[in-house]
Image (tube, rainbow, N blue to C red; front, top):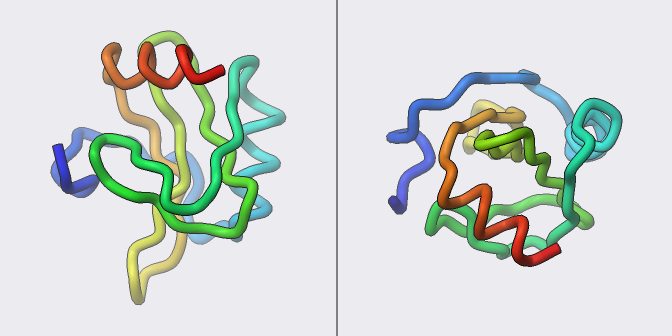
Length: 90
């Protein structure tokens, strides 16, 4: 893929801190995994303050995305292949 902004995403949380995004994922999603900054998701390296929590909900992947000058957002993207790939890492 290469560009998060080209994905059909839904904003779950707008303008949250990395900690707020991590806490939201851990509280609202049964399945989650923690990764380090630089981890690739949708062929893009994500940044943040570790640990970075990624949620899984069926075929949906929920993850923080930082857009320079706009802040950090928690995004929800439906992608079965990426969700399966992340589950295999657990």
